[in-house]
Length: 281
Image 1 (tube, helix red, strand yellow):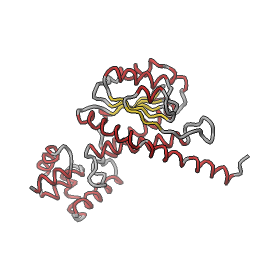
Image 2 (spheres, rainbow, N blue to C red):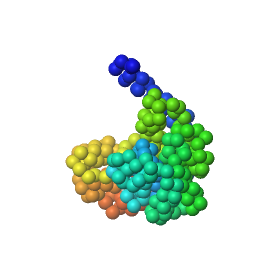
Image 3 (tube, rainbow, N blue to C red):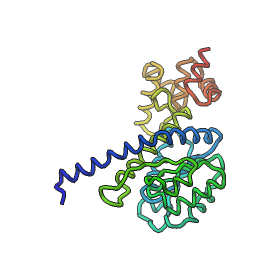
Image 4 (cartoon, rainbow, N blue to C red):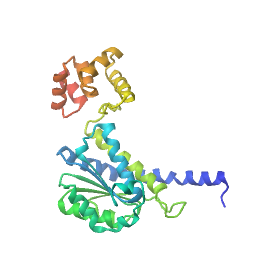
């Protein structure tokens, strides 16, 4: 029997291998990011597909993109075996339905430019494998994330991200380091994609949605940091830009009206840096 200090130490120490597993998968993450950006620039959607812990992590990663990077909700699909109720109550039997993965993607009208991020710690989940097989046949990009090297999911996906975390300290509990490795991987992958899609300026999160007082303060601080403007100047610009930080930055840096700043951003593909460089020419 573990004493309490030993128990806590064992649980914490075992998590260290999660980060090492993700670091080893960096080349695959680079390939996945590049391939995903190419599809998304053509108008594709991000589609998360998983079961159990993996499915919940996929849903969490996807929904966080909406407020953080203003990712359009119509370009996000999050699917978990058993449906929405499985987010809150285990629906283990649902993951054994191979055909359900395809049915769910058919219902969402999966298209060739979509990016399917398929998650299964074991890499053998029928629901996920069924979805990947359908997506492959359709020509969508499939990215498989599994903690079991050599698993069927990694063989089936166009881009395989193997997270070799090894046995859990509590045997079979994939919510531990397997889940931690998947969370780090998803954070890295989706954030890298958003950076490449010009959702960030420098290290500033300039495409956030201003939906409450806290985020309005954050938008103001970001605008001031990016432009050197005073609080009064930044607040005025944000008001005229309808709280769109990118527009406010371009307005202040290039001394433009809101419509002109929006046009400059559109011409620059949404990149603040490119818009500023073009305006300085």
